[in-house]
Amino acid sequence: MGPITIFDKSFLQSLSVDESVWFDNFFLVNISPLFYIETLADLAKEMTRGRTPEQIVGEIASKTPEMGGSPNIHHMDLLINNLLGQKVVMDGRPILAGGKPVMSGKKKGVAFDVSPEAKAYSRWQNREYQEIERDFAKQWRAQVKAMTFDNSENYARKLGIDISKCKNMNDAYGAVNSLVASNSKPYDLIEFVLTSLTVPRELHQQIVQRYQISGLPPLTSYAPYVAHVVKIEVFFHICVSRGFISSERPSNKIDIAYLHYLPFCKLFVSGDKLHKRVAPLFMKRD
Image 1: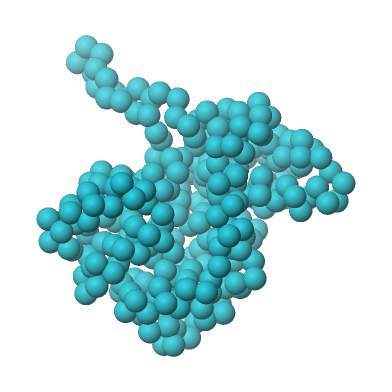
Image 2 (image 1 turned 45 degrees about the vertical axis):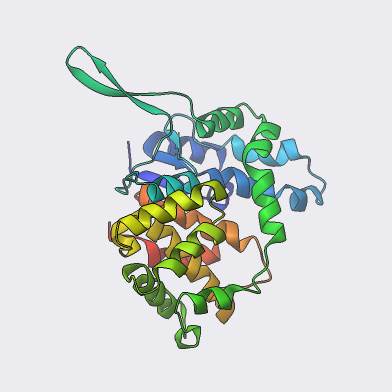
């Protein structure tokens, strides 16, 4: 089997059914939860053209890999667990939920229960779109619809970033790299993580206390996956503030969130213009 690949909706739409079968045969696929969200979020727009939801989603679902697909844990679950001390392995492999260590004789292994992501993947393949909508898309789409970018500049300023010095996306990327590698504003940074990324309030005290006990180190060493997500989120706010990314398309938020899953693949495939501009900045050399 080929390299582990993450794709967005635009890629599957570009394939014929036959091509999608070859893709499934020769590539291992990491299914991001955002793939369902992006597909279902576009239903209203597509339905104005006279097509039914079943036709729209069914066409894409028929091309979704079945043999080599593995659904990744949602990035917010990974972020919260990383904040609580769990290691998140970022070596190009999917992170699956529900694993429990088991022993058979002298051999050790891991048994996986069926995770919410895996259940959603199964329902997707069975064309049960309403259940996917309930689990993933409805809440996310409501967040995207309610999203405004009025506070983007304030976010950056509070974190110590002078966005006027960011003349292009490369400058913005350099600024966020410096941010997560520094511990000059640890409390402002952890506040950004907890509030802007909507970490459940009941976990705030535990997360802050653990960070304090650890000596408030830079995020890159304390919680590397959190650092990765924070870089993307703050980068997004800077680029919106500076006009490098349009504030007129809230769906850009879904597109940019795909980058949270880059540590869990070897290839990222998309025909999206925003991905083409931004994704290379956050990719590792391999």
